[in-house]
Length: 267
Image (cartoon, rainbow, N blue to C red; front, side):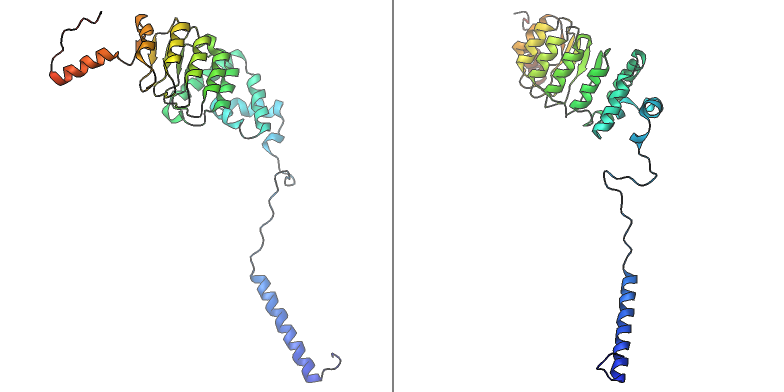
């Protein structure tokens, strides 16, 4: 009994406290249980094994990365520094035959429209240039993340053997990239610059000077490329997808008037 309280008051006090405790207990039981804490970035659950914890030389390289397509490897190396080191180690161990196989696979991948997208960035192209010494043909159409710096690196690393290249539909590619390609790709035969809005006459003039093997050039929608820079290539028989201004005018006149006036095109 609480001192100073009458027996009736002490009983009421005890009853009141008991009801409060029961109410509190019921309230706590209705609250949702807190989910177990997930391990933080540097922590790991007891007994769990992460991918990078597996032996690299004995497991990951021969049994995992060897089955991953090159395009996926280029994505994987962007996840973290550790994954990049793992991928670089794998690529460094590729023999010549496997390297040619990977290069052929990547060319096939890049030739499909669904792969002409933003995953091909400067880092991916650098990795390709470093690990594909036999590279001859490359389609980078609509790879809009690529800028002049990446194309310059490609030209300097693999320009000597490059024969066909498409940089079409890339507004970030300009004269700096085209000029470096011209200086480093003496065997270049086909170049597609369709829709490269920053390419101008300076780049085309450099192509005419340094690329004697050039057979075709695509410059449609390159609005800064003027006819004088193309005329030197036309005289060499290079196939260009843009007609000379005089020919365009004659075609327009024929469409409008229904006949083609006699004009000496050799003048």
